Image 1: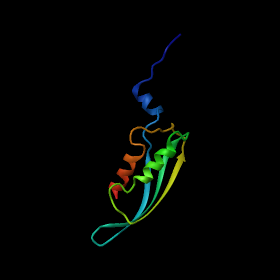
Image 2: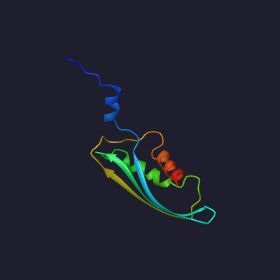
Image 3: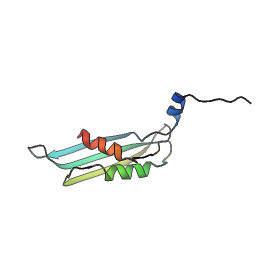
Image 4: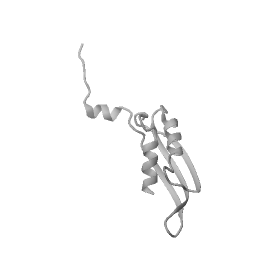
Length: 105
């Protein structure tokens, strides 16, 4: 029987990775730049199956403010089924994505 070993590139293309997340936002600030309002839609690329996508999105939403105190926040989350490999969670479970989003603001 012939065996086949996949390359690292093939493995990375077909294995679940950290969830790609996209955010669209509107912010309100004071004249000094202090954030006072945030409205955002967060889109989580689940891949072809949900796997841990719901838990990743929950953590992303609860960590989105990170260390900032924003008095008025509205977050809408969307777990999106796509035609790519199923994404999974490890270590941060959506926390790193959330921190990246808020730091971009």
